[in-house]
Amino acid sequence: MRIVVCEDNKKDRECLISCLDAELCRRRMTAEIQVYESGEALLAAGQLPFQIYFLDIFMPNISGITVARALRQKDNDAAIVFITSSRDFYADGFTVGAAHYLLKPFAKADISEALNRCLRQVGEGERYIELTVNRERRRILFSELIWVESQDKVCILHLRSGEYRSYIRLDELEQQLDDPRFLRCHRSFLINMDETAEMKRGIFYMTTGEEIPARQTERAHLRGEYENYLFEKMRRR
Image 1 (tube, helix red, strand yellow):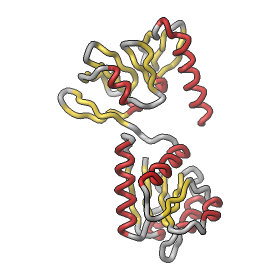
Image 2: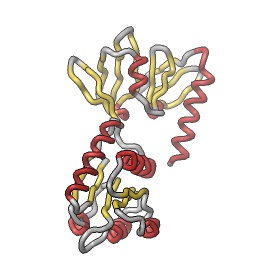
Image 3: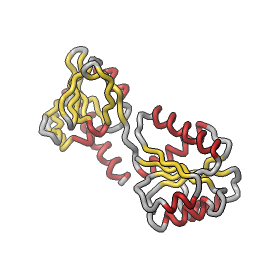
Image 4: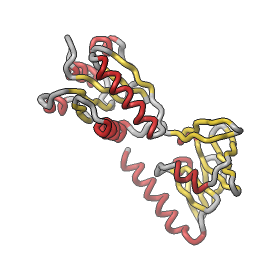
């Protein structure tokens, strides 16, 4: 995910970037933040694949509203957040589909809410978990994790890049994987439903060919969880 911060005031710019970094870290999300000190510099950079824009409204020469209108001519999908010290321009924000307004001075809760609204608009960014693998701390993207098997105090992580072992109990790993795509389908197994081809006769068939059993006593409930997830995923699209 790529984010733009376009703010001419150095103090406000650095404060916003610091808060965004902290919020992304708290969510275990990765993002590249590109900084511009003026609307002219941002527009001169050309069309780049940015998903979220934080634009100061009051900038010399070219206002944030003007920048947003220029951006919308090329990109209707990106999320735009206006930075302002006044509520007077809220109506202008509707014309460019602003996701949120941030009032100065910034509050961490407001930045968190702005990011929430942006992520709902553009889709969730890449989240990850940090685990010790082969005695080294490693970041594992949620999207890379296909399924997990527990063997006593060890979890065997099946990733797109291969199989890895980490000394962590599945109960603890499940808590850290706080994302609706993951389903604890058995005492010893956890699956990524985005990587599940189908479920039938109490078996989850993974896109990589593995067959993961569901708890026998909860098969109907687990099927419902899986079908509800697919429905919500389709509805968001």
